[in-house]
Length: 116
Image 1 (cartoon, rainbow, N blue to C red):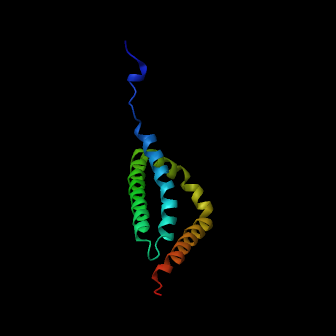
Image 2: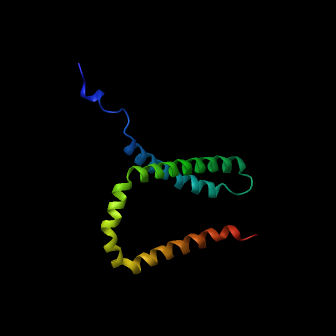
Image 3: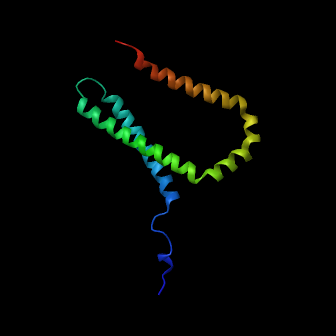
């Protein structure tokens, strides 16, 4: 008696990497916000907890992102090469987006350099 479900692997790696990437990304946002809020003096226990959560989620996000890119490499390369002609239509928007997001991130992060 051969059951059709016994031939299928118990866990499919490609969807696992995608869902892990999504879940780790979800943990990054609230842990980052909480880490920022708990970074004031007197909150060292909470700050350490949120830093640990954030760093763990970051590590899992990185591992899942690398796995996702490796498993979907052919599809990603095909998509980029097929869409290469379309990117030239949006040169101005692409440049504004890259520079705008980069400037915003650097500006917001620069508050850490100010010494009280």
